[in-house]
Length: 139
Length: 139
DNA sequence: TCATATAGTTTGATAATCAAACTAGTTGGT
DNA sequence: ACCAACTAGTTTGATTATCAAACTATATGA
Image 1 (tube, rainbow over the protein chains, first blue to last red):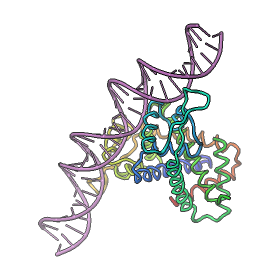
Image 2 (tube, rainbow over the protein chains, first blue to last red; image 1 turned 90 degrees about the vertical axis):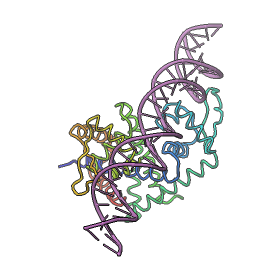
Image 3 (cartoon, each protein chain N blue to C red; image 1 turned 90 degrees about the horizontal axis):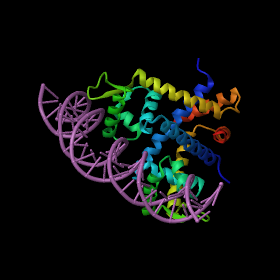
């Protein structure tokens, strides 16, 4: 007999796998790379940050991030702005256009979430949100 | 005021982002590529499947998957087995060694899940599992 | 002041990926 | 039964992503 933790673990993994596939399909349709939209998503969620920190969150080296930010800059989605106190450092910041892309992507996620919880009543949605928020805070 | 769906959506996205970063870190430590472990995870979670279906789930073209499965085969993690009724098709199946890798990776996930739900009682874990399973089934 | 550390870029090589052409097998309409 | 249209997977040739390591510019601390 499987423990409840094992069942939950597999539910988490299945959700993660399905969301990954969904995300990949979405970005492919838009003709942008997964890493690119991932960077936009991180900047949208956490705000402007230095190259190094963004590289860590995206999961690439700073060398790779330099190229990625070059491409994002060419596409007018981000801009490099000087760090206030450390002249070695550079902040990566979403442009208006980048913010728009982030919001569009977020709206697609919202559609998906609504679709996935179509059979839920308001209390169940609220309950699931509470439980997932507790999980996120423990991360 | 944000709707409950929006809150849940952002909880899902935060969970997905955090799990992605965790997965990336784990995979880097092991020295294998994210795509490779992703394929193993999909095969472990959903069972053997044809090239095309695996390509869709991994999010690459069938051409790319051919190379990936070649590499996985060289590493003795998967094998190509004939499809019962369609001779054009090939099933990708985890080997014993591939299954072992999946189980090791799954154990890491389970540790994480237990850690994330350390503050939950048994009923809450069961409840979250029920809700997430319903979400997964709607995917 | 100067040795050491850090942020970001560049470089050269390797690996991942794609689109399109190709092979082999299936299916449906006549 | 035949054959045109379709599908699964592979191969090929080119492009892109990525890394490690060397490099530049700035910061820090003894």
